[in-house]
Length: 65
Image (cartoon, rainbow, N blue to C red):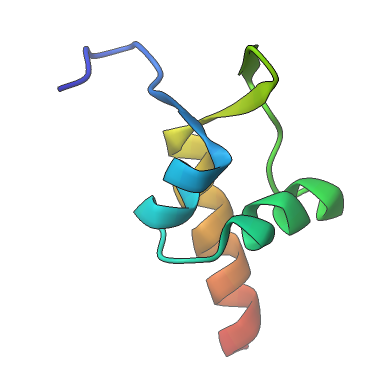
């Protein structure tokens, strides 16, 4: 459960599971500027889950047009 106003940060593999894509797709979204890391945990980049969902919506919308 997340607190209101507090971002949920996840690693690329977890982000990929949440939006049903491969972890490589998360990395590709970063390369293309669709998604930006929000922090680090050790060597892993962390992403705001809200941003991951937004990137997924943008890329899906782009494919349907």
